Image 1 (cartoon, rainbow, N blue to C red):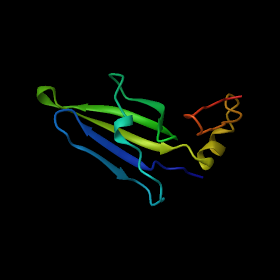
Image 2 (cartoon, one colour; image 1 turned 120 degrees about the vertical axis):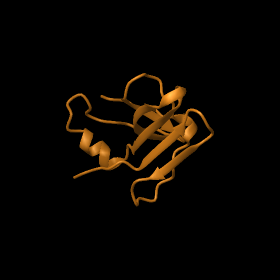
Image 3 (tube, one colour; image 1 turned 90 degrees about the vertical axis):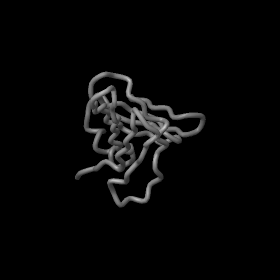
Image 4 (cartoon, helix red, strand yellow; image 1 turned 90 degrees about the horizontal axis):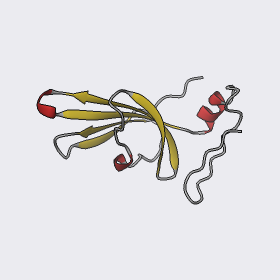
Length: 108
């Protein structure tokens, strides 16, 4: 079973251009692009909370001339399907997501 990414977000480093494109036909709410920032000088994956929804976020900065760049974010929502795929890992026996006062993740 495959669990695909839902969104591609792009943010310009030299203009106000920001966009988020759906990559699937699932009817899910788009995350807030202000929640995504590049924090490292190399591509990386992190988990982020956007609107009390947890995402895996692949992040890369594509640089151009004169200090220009575009930040790209590939987003995969952590849903029941993905959680069941992760549960085979001995380090991750169970995810507990609680969207009460912020998002809490526990691996037990």
